[in-house]
Length: 377
Image 1 (cartoon, helix red, strand yellow):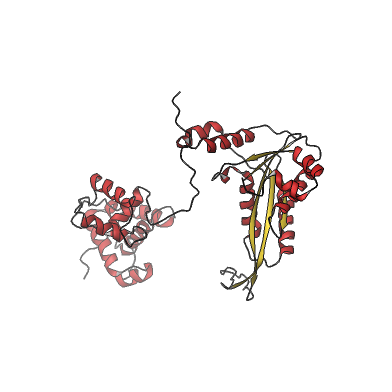
Image 2 (image 1 turned 90 degrees about the horizontal axis):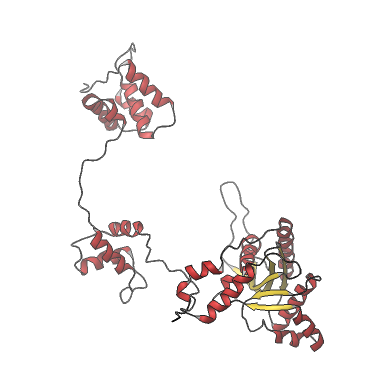
């Protein structure tokens, strides 16, 4: 026998039919509306579905159907359709004081024998230090998530020296160059290089199919290395690439000659590059005759990014784009690398892709203030 009988009014039935017929409501609300409509004993229906039939049709349990009927009879339509806020009150396991202690602990050095803090390790240490009687690792996780802390993660980063006059001097010189307007007679060109491994597949990859990505075997065969030179003029949206077997002083000097040849009408080329031992005027004299080396050097103004400041070289951005779009795959010979890089360069030059550099000297003096030495005047 049914303990709770659902009898809907015309207005209630119309409201429930509107909810069930539109896909703008929460799934739980729609299911409750369908349960009530199927359990309605008003109307002229001669045969009504049983509780088990309703449960099977809506893919819910019979107890769920009974609970909805009971709630409707005892509390009404609105509490049945809309979930009411919980009236239970819970004591906070981690208050403001304990949260501050947890954050300080997570930012400290991990205990001896541990590479980093884990959630369970932090929870155990809070109990050991008698900050709290007991706490679960899940409670610790929620507190750390709220404060956007992940002490088990470490990110490799090149950290600049603190309060370095040499660093900020070189940085501001580069930033001032980037603020210049475009001048075809005095172009600003950024140069960088990257080594790439030549890798051969040991097994034939499995082609991609519907619902399945391309598969490569984790084993591979190294076939040597090559080097990719990149020269980029950010304001003009043009670049020059060259793939070489090595990156010696001679290779760099020949690439500088190629840069000069690609700007025949420029009076002087400002070349921004990293401060490597191969990037010097002496490399030009080792590669060419003195007269030719001097004539080539006179066409350039060499500007070096500071040590640990390679992020200031916009050619590094272009190299990252090249690797992501073109070289993030296994290529086993240098000729293929050359043809692929040339195709990438042609396509990107046709798009006139530029680097929208926004960081200025004014920004550096605010955001990188700790790098500036403290002066008495």
